[in-house]
Length: 100
Image (cartoon, rainbow, N blue to C red; front, side, top):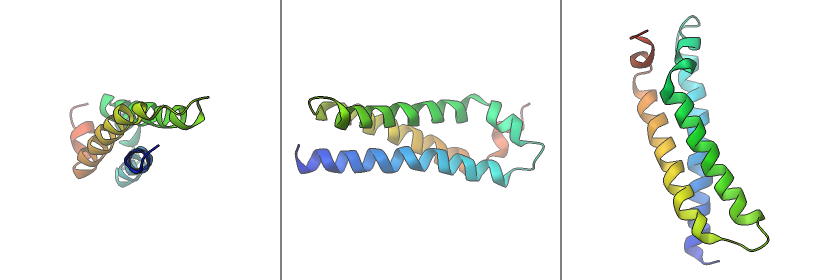
């Protein structure tokens, strides 16, 4: 594997960890009665699913019998999408619970 693949792996791991931790911090900023509404919204659940899928692709890249660095590109893309969705959600978390 080249240096680019290791950089992609680091980027994927960092973004895949950033998304759930940011969502958790965002949920903590909400009032306690709004937290269940926040976690029932499709955006946080989709963000967590994308982050989990990116982490699985990252693990599969390194734990497969043969290293498959071509899986790092879609994994990094999914992780960055999840991180950007978590960041956007963290800007104003009330927009997810306001309509319910």
